[in-house]
Amino acid sequence: MSDMIRVAVDAMGGDNAPVEIVKGAVEAVNADKRVKVYLVGIQAAVEAELGRYTYNPAQVTVVPATEIIETAEPPVMAIRKKKDSSIVKAMQLVKDGTCDGFVSAGSTGAVLVGGQVIVGRIKGVERAPLAPLIPTENGVSLLIDCGANVDARPSHLVQFAKMGSVYMENVMGIKNPRVGIVNIGAEEEKGNALVKETFPLLKNCPEINFVGSVEARDIPLGLADVIVCEAFVGNVVLKMYEGVGAVFLKKIKGTLMSSLKTKIGALLIKPALKKTLKGFSTDEYGGAPMLGLSGLVVKSHGSSKAIEIRNSILQCVTFTEQKITDKIKEKITLED
Image (cartoon, rainbow, N blue to C red; front, side, top):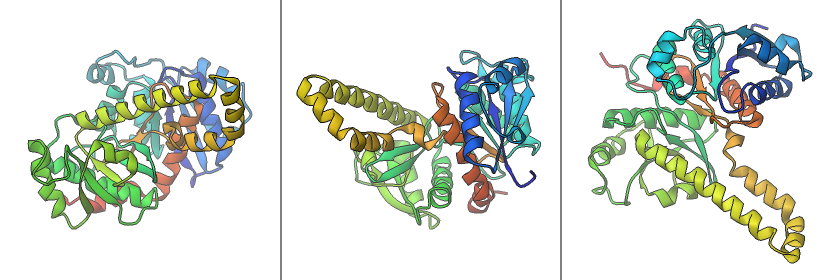
């Protein structure tokens, strides 16, 4: 059992906890015999959900926690006060080496604070960004940062580019990934003060494959594999992506169900359409890793269903096997 990938899961985090969280955990261990999940949460509630499924008991351990950090709570205070919460106890399992990674659909603020305070940053990393995979015409791109560092400096964005390159090359198998910075035009002289100052730093960084500015409309086209920005811009991009996707899907369904003729057409194209739409579902790619920490922290959507929790857990397997944390350590130049 010592060679298994061990993942601590916040069983009480998210809108659908613990039902979908436990279901996703069971699906993960049933899909991969290398995974051992530590479900951290209210013991009675977690065990009641586990009783509904068939799985290898050697791959699942319940870790009791008596407290839950709610989404509306001030993150710093919650992490300090609720030492027996599912988030804090699960992160402690990563910090002390019991687990290789942590997954939560709970409070984003608490996960971000806990990642910094409990797990801790790699020496030399100035800020730890959230980096989700987003679907594009050609596959996926990594959006970094999408929510952790609203007021970033140019040196932070350069590190984001380096860490994002490590992730895309080793986890997604993209050799020499293209790095772009989100801007309001393709010209180098365009952008706000942060972008203008960061652009030449990225351009002259030999450790990345910088392709220049990427406008928002170019992101879905997949013109860059690593999309660099500070968290305010990144979060707007991500939320717009999700909103437009939801409306587009609703419109397609409405059109296909509008008449008998379209319903017949929908039946004929259903397999192909389902396959195409699946590629644009963020659930398929797991959660957003918080890169640059001493241990793996993955934040899933608050509305996560079992499929995203499952994929977030399996994401930890690739991350751990590829030794991403060690490779980020090597990539980042340590400062005196």
